[in-house]
Image 1 (tube, rainbow, N blue to C red):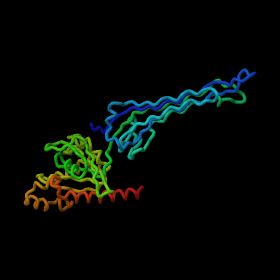
Image 2 (tube, rainbow, N blue to C red; image 1 turned 30 degrees about the vertical axis):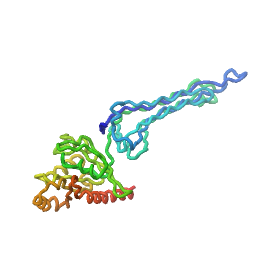
Image 3 (cartoon, one colour; image 1 turned 90 degrees about the vertical axis):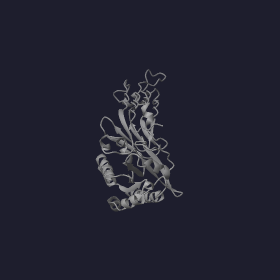
Image 4 (cartoon, rainbow, N blue to C red; image 1 turned 60 degrees about the vertical axis):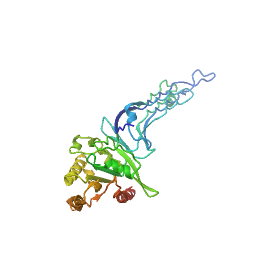
Length: 337
């Protein structure tokens, strides 16, 4: 399945039906009182979150969504039939904006959450409403109000608790494949991960959290270089970031500085998140290299962890630590809510 995280669509709600002009037919009365019914309401356009969806791919094939118009009112005070609303299902984590104004309309976070993005037109009143003592046979009704037409921008941001950030080929995909049921593509070359991966990590029988693995960052990613800039939005919502540094890197401190700088350029708030520094692929280190790394500034300043996803060294401890941070974040969110 192709992963698409941005899309542009046009939506149009239905017009309200016009009111009707008619008069009662009564025996011995040439023209009875007005009995024209009201027009029906036009259909609205609704955005709904669907946890079964994980991409905006469908919107590359269909870009126009139009609700039906309400029906015209009838005689005998009959109201015209209102049109059905149309429901557009999007993945949870989708932000919807008005492309013309740039205004954010909604941020769909939960399954089943619904927001009306284009309101259907109101039905017009029939001539029954326009009778007065001086005009008992009104020959006019009211037209329905028009629907709304909008161009919407959809942007998907994965709803993950933990975001894995690092250079290409640093072992993010391997880690997520070990600690979760996700099976990302893994190979020994840069940019193996071309789309974000989302994995569910279970902690015991009833606890779990989600981890997002995005394509590797490089210096200049926030300015459009490499692939990472396309997917930085997917770690905006995370409670904790894991900075993964290759244990065999010649300049681990510089690697960490570049990663932090790219996040800061993309969104300064990203650097305020809880974070854990992890040295990956430590199984490839010689004893001397490991001692040297353990005595480095990065380990001392950030209490960096050592892991090997292949050898499953330190992964269980990392999962427990991540769960501790995620749990605290969830409790704080509940208090704020």
